[in-house]
Image (cartoon, rainbow, N blue to C red; front, side, top):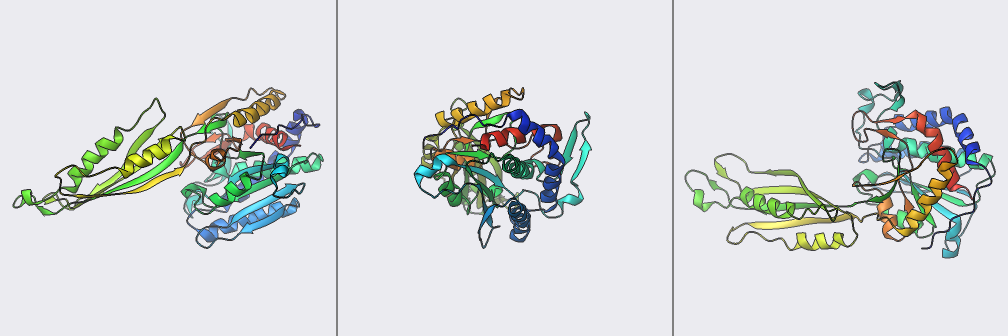
Length: 398
């Protein structure tokens, strides 16, 4: 889909920055409320409770709310702001899809050991700490704040869809089709995932997961050694084979991250398994890796059975012409507030991978700046909230 780059906004980015600074305490308060509503991906009730908070806030901003009800996972929240346009392709030029998620990797009760609080780090930088602050509840709060600023300035001249997913951390099994449908009705997609340092992300690797299961034959290691068929030995051969598919020049990595098997040291192991993470930089490499895994066979005369399960979960988000075009616009707007915005790629994946693979210009890493995503020191740097929220507002303005 062609990308429509809008005319320069009538409200200066510096004015938006001043507005974002005035609203910083409000933004932080909303972030804290979202963080305090713990929302692990595998707890529907908890995720739905966090979605309730977001829906209530959207209602206060006159958002049009559609709740996609789910049974196994948390509900998906589709929030629309600004002008109304139909689903026709011709209307896409006036619509922007903003992607966020409210699920986290942290189990209920994590706040007891990772309290949500504002506290300086060891270098004196003011930070907001807590599970989900960086990934990515601060980004969601930034989007709400940016929309509110544009409403107050009468600069919301597009239709903005803020889609809040409930199971991004476990692969987006139910939200993916919703994301893809809305992306195809939009001119561009902005993703509120954390920044790469200070940079926006213009590319991401695709991800895949496989499991190798080997079934051998148990035997006494001392009495009947030759009668056994070692599943672990066969798994070792398979691990060497798939690991050799790593090609750093192509941006392809194969990591056997978890293995298991066997029962006792004096028993020839009858079972063994391995879980494999695969990252690819090019879209064509996904099917190529799927064919390679599908073609795996046991070592000749090993006498074991090998089964392979898995595939590519997210295609790569490649650095496309459309993505570069909207990044250049962001870079130009950032320069108005003396911010030299840079771009970066990452090996991690997001829901932006889905939209980019559809040919929709997708810009990622537009959320908060911080460190420790999925780690006990998860936090955001407060000083970057206002400039990044101002730039987000400028990008959303019609």
